[in-house]
Image (cartoon, rainbow, N blue to C red):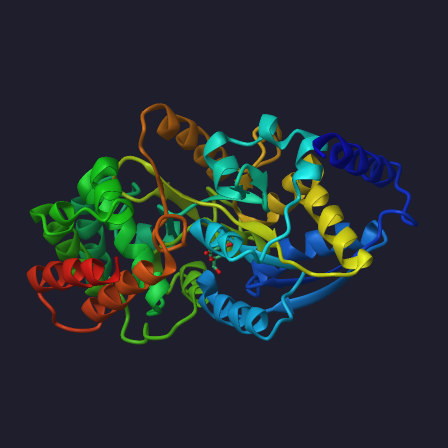
Length: 417
Ligand code: BGC
């Protein structure tokens, strides 16, 4: 079986690389949530590459950063018996859909192209169900990034990016005094959770992060360290402007571009926005990891739902192969702000932030401080993540004390497990 699959995929891929559009077509309907300027540019590179092979691409974008709206739309489509051919999906969500028997595998393509040899093992594991690839990863995003406008910092007399939360708070106080909003933020649950997890890593370190946000250990969840993390989140709440509720993340990035705000704490899809607006890293904007040591991993991938029809099935195979091609991984990630999922794509043409991300990723793997993003669905089931998002958002939008937050969070997690 394995050999037949391998042979079939090999002949299809040979047709692909020979540029034979007649044989390498196929149709895909792609459900994704990449609708901001940088995101649209990035997904556009996939559409173009697919169409250049003679394929038909039907676009199904569902607006809403972080993908919560897209996941609701996906469920409705599957329940209606009409799933899209390819879906932007990640982390444990891949396993959940695979367990329900909803996914086709692309193992034949993975065998023919030896994906195991070019993907970091930690990522390859997430893409597989029962030993077979059911998803293809496009990138590695880092969540614990801080973006800044150098002119805004200079106006407040800040010459260095902060490296501890105390330094961050001191810089933010200076910005407040200079009349500049310290932190551009959008009050949406996934954005609040993004701040929260970066703070948890910074305050508690990687082992603590893992215990609290991945293993859901009650002792960690109720610890003084967790109280300290909520205290820092409360500080951050004081540094956002009054119009933050509901704001989309890319509009917060635009505030930093315009110098209306000094910092944004957001994954490196924010860099995609800066780049799409023609901004140059190191000049127009600065990047630095959020205070703390480690790397919060987020990786986008596409899964292939059970559809019928030769054209759709072929579309899935062709798309999987394209996603994993070194050329595509380079072009896409230059636009998206992330780095390639493949380990063999040279980073020479990537900017200083991407190179730092790569170096820090290798260091984090080496010293065991690589942690999966809870906010971006890499760590825990959606149902438990939902409890974190609800609580963190309620904390951010109320006067709840850190002690109460910790108590309520631990109870909510215990109920959801
Ligand atoms: C995704 C990114 C996306 C961001 C904002 C994250 O969860 O991984 O690809 O750009 O959400 O929409």
